[in-house]
Length: 257
Ligand code: PGA
Image (cartoon, rainbow, N blue to C red; front, side, top):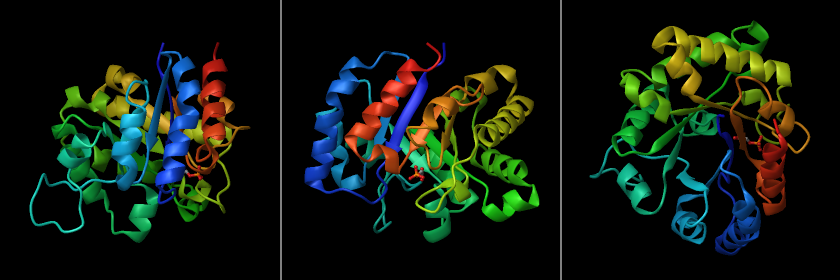
């Protein structure tokens, strides 16, 4: 049986105290988590080491929200994959729509970062999504598949199952976002899965992890997880409080059982 991934990125939120409080508060739920679940948390860089050491004995994986594609050198303000790894990260979020919209992330930098992450044994978590306008034009699947293809360009086939893809419709993310319906989410996930099968074969496609993100909440999480092509959820606001995250873990645990 495939694992169900349940993760959160804190984006640019929390401070030392609230980061530590979150980690301590989710500990009991993590201790009870079955091996069917793959929990993960992606704090801002300054709290990475603390969160990863507080949770080091748990199944949870810790990640970073971005990396540089270079290992070291004159790249002021950047964090290399080696540094992320050194501080406890095993996952790298790449290409979130906020980075694409506000910080100059492009399909080209996304693929460079996917290669860099894999080079160092980090799991790239590649975010792809359609805008509201693309949805209106009826080109959501094309847009998302294009992003996936570029992100995975020139990745050796044997490394592909190390890559996690998160479908995050831009129109579904954040306070003004409208969550995708179960059907909308499954339709795009299925389109991604079929495109991967066409490119790399059914076996690779079936073994790649595809997550849904964008206004996931305690009411829709269970239904999303149960969709045939959705392997888990990548959550913002609902998981920033420890109680919300713990509840999402319980929902995942109950699903399909
Ligand atoms: P949200 O954020 O759950 O708060 O909508 C999701 C995301 O940006 O990954």
